Image (cartoon, rainbow, N blue to C red; front, side, top):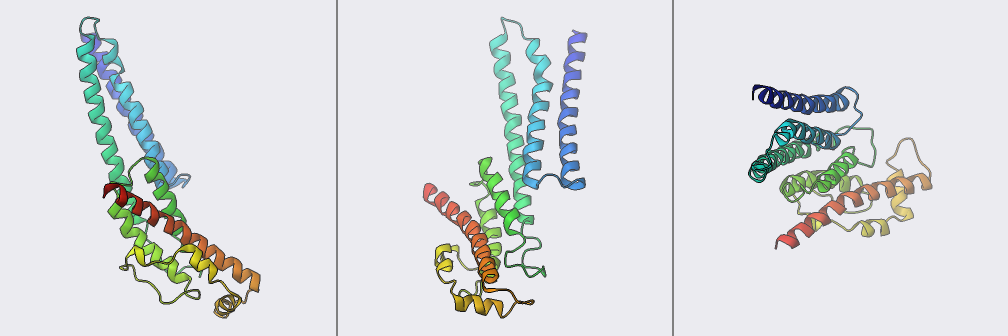
Length: 234
């Protein structure tokens, strides 16, 4: 009996070590080497946590007798499901923090790019949130950050439209991406180039404006996804 308890204890410790080691490795890749994104760190850590859980319970599964097999498996499954649910909640909470931090640096004094610097990372983060089916639970958090980044990206295209937007404006008030593309005329490009230093060619100006609209289009697509969620829950 003592040997069995020691083996169970050893597997539990080893499972915890594997889980913590995976999280530590993920933090090292995220912070020190900057090889993975925040969303990838969530997936990486969650995977190691599940592996650690399996290892921790492995010895207990091996000790089941045939007669008591059904009851003990049911108890183990219930405990494992509870732990996995807790891990999912922790993952959602971590995603929430990442969404809230995704607006840091947005609209700051950058290099004058027509694409807001937070656009790509925010879109990638929302893609990972969707992948793990967390968008519904984070809908309000995503909308709040989206309103800010979308308004800033929209205002970067000020030579195409009037007036500018505020982050408090409803998402329904924004132009469709194709409507902005249709407004890119030679006169609009000339107006845009008149504010650039050094001066660009017409084609360079057109390319930059198209890049700006493309970034806006990616953000607008997230707005459409949130609308679909509302329709499903209506």
